[in-house]
Length: 396
Ligand code: SF4
Image (cartoon, rainbow, N blue to C red; front, top):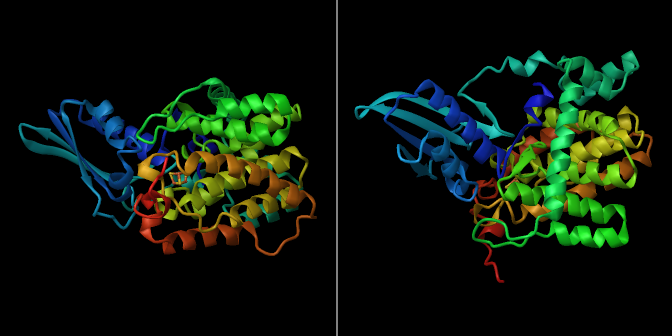
């Protein structure tokens, strides 16, 4: 498994796989072909089908140069390796001088065909929760200890920085009124939720408001943290910001909780997928919910087994969740879904803490089920906007 710095990334929304990944790929291709007179970029599968709403073409042109870049959408081409394929071509004197096929596999991460990812095994010795629980029990250490001994030395500093960026995006979103970009013309709702929270002062209204705030910032293309993706970036900040305010939890503990939640996200990313185009929304918001549940369980004093159970419950009850963004925008159902899943993360945490951590289905089984379910999902429900809510008539 890779470092958590690859999971929690600071960047601009609205999509880690459709905006941040292509942005990074375009920058890498540009670096290698600075003098090209023209670029052509073919977008395949999900990138072609929802690229417009996710600003894929816009960001690639922005990086490579608006005037010298042509984007070809190829929605009928689904490459076996991953549905988010893209091919870059550089031209000089009308002749192709370089080409590069690359895949945006979720969370802003890029992979090439048949790439053997040595990085994946560099940081973590154990890559299933079963092995990790055995190891931590044998050594008498916590899940946080396992993360700290596996990661680079400065990971806590990194987590502190990530908490700052997350909370800045919450606070911007709580006070920014207006309409979200795009044809849906959705009104931002976080500020009105926050005003109601200020009267009620309860936890749940602040969880809703904070998660909405970040998701609305993401939909506006502003700076957020992938947690684990842009589309699911509201869940963890929704939980952590609300807990920090209502239960007066300091940033040091929040940074540690983030690392515990990160371990769960890393397990899903390594053993299944966090890409909506590959496995549907169960891999994005489902994973975010499991991460937030584990982080909350850590903050509330859960032991290793209870933390694992909290994550497992959260993930199990998102299995099969489809990705069908209306008109390809990361807005409906995404924004509301982040808020609801943030609350579900707290429910999962509270449920697990009422047990001794014993349970029937373990997290590893649930992660494998997610992967299998994702494979079985009709492609219409894997970030193509061809089915489900995306096909419904929006009556306003
Ligand atoms: S439905 Fe879920 S997976 Fe699909 S774009 Fe929205 S947040 Fe991402």
